[in-house]
Amino acid sequence: MKERDICEVTCVDTHKTTRLQPLVEKSNIVEVTKLFKALSDETRMKIAYALTMENELCVCDVANIVGATTATASHHLRHLNGLGLAKYRKEGKLVYYSLDDDHVKQLIHIAFEHQEEVSSRR
Image: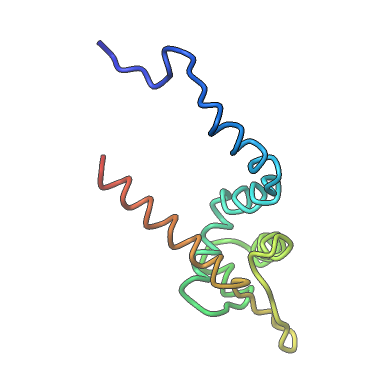
């Protein structure tokens, strides 16, 4: 008999649901969703991952690393910047990007660690 991954009866823990529902509703789910949506794009994740390994990279270097045009890389970097995941500094005619803070780096490292764990279980 195949195991089903759904409850077969309705059983609501009122104490837990009453406590958790307002906390979930008050949280800033929409903004956090935007963060994960930004990182769900393969090119942006490549860029973010590369930026975990270097403190900063020029837009031209990012484009070369991810195999994109500088215009495409710049577009993705601006998107990451707009969501507070990356920041930039301008030096003459060059623009250098880095991850905004250590939280972003931790998120990316944790995601890769988790993916390796899941792959090893298969």
